Length: 71
Image (cartoon, rainbow, N blue to C red):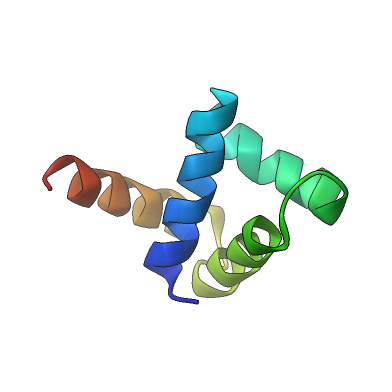
């Protein structure tokens, strides 16, 4: 899975739940596949590998949000 696809999967969870990206991220890490789909759990793993530091993740998410808003 590409990091951009992983971002979109987590963002869909955010939109569905009406929660922030960071809240959903933490909730997926906390509850994993007990609550979330395997695809959402895999998306967190992909982004964790792609962005090993919190600052990297925040920057990547900001870039993706800008790209989505410009399309």
